[in-house]
Length: 270
Image (tube, rainbow, N blue to C red; front, side):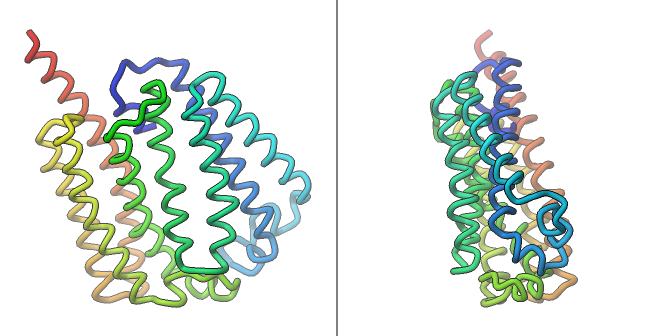
């Protein structure tokens, strides 16, 4: 909901709740379709073999029915109670994750970029919900931050799980091109600096955000650099856990500095 909180305009409780509910339903739908499609492959991986479908705790037809119902309700709720742009983004999220990313995983390493695009949609959706469907430059920067973050986060995890992915036949960078996997992690960790700097330039955050965000981004970038220099299990785990801390801290800082910027703007008007 960071996109909703950062977008211009006064936050309203009802649209916020409908946005959260609709987004959650769309995410549940996409995950249901994904697991329904990947049952035979999930059963081969230690990380996923205990999923309900893989261990036959849920019938495939029930999972498919839930995915259809959740997607219909999620997109419908966003359309009726939020706005058509938010609904379109919710539908795109389902289609990209279940229809594009899931299929690409067994075909090409480009699946990681498709998956990152899926991860970039929620903050853009939140912005659209708060702004009445208008997507300004700030929406794309927020989406860009989530897009870039996916690579150090997922690539480090994929390195640890590369044996599992290979056994299930997935075409992951960590399996087919491990050096590229580490290099891409570092590349996108560094991209977090200019993306974060764009928020003060757009007047969304106050200038001090540049300092705070650089400290947070710097730590993850350092972990990504270490992983690039030594792409082993120790450094992949270090980068993965740094990414888990990095994102919530950065989003909290964005929201805090947005509030500071708004207060500064009010003072200037007095």
